[in-house]
Amino acid sequence: MKKVFFTGQRTIENDIETIPKLMKTIKNLLMEGATDFYAGGAIGWDTLCENVILILRDERVPYIKLHLVLPCPPEEHTARWSRLDKEEYLKILEAADSVEIVSEHYSKECLKKHNARLAETGDICVCYYDEKSRRSGAAQTVRMAKKPGKKIINLR
Image (tube, rainbow, N blue to C red; front, side, top):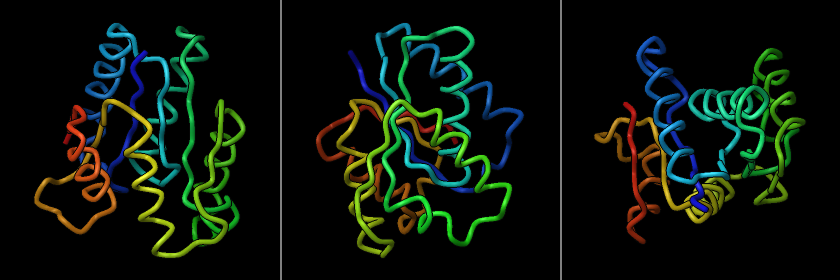
């Protein structure tokens, strides 16, 4: 069984094109045997991917699993988020098949640990990031995934 993980930017530039590409990519991965999908619980790309997996699981593909790998406890992770983002996060958290919290408290180091753990989880990385951006968490996670030669699918 193939495992897939998601990483990406907070801002998605063209939802009209990106969402169908994401759906098609996930459906292709399902046909290739993917069953477990891991995401990091961040605003933007992660939230979009988590919602797509939950919709597919609830409507058509009940055997797929959504696993969250969070950098720190939800209260700290979402401390600066808007009320709406927190509400959506909590819905996803409740619907997830599993939740792993990497660090007890929020810090820059916990974000690096989180990215490393996420890169460990799957065989395939479905990402959305600008390959010229070297300093983002998504770029760091993709670099970590490339070292062991995992398949990278960038939908940006």
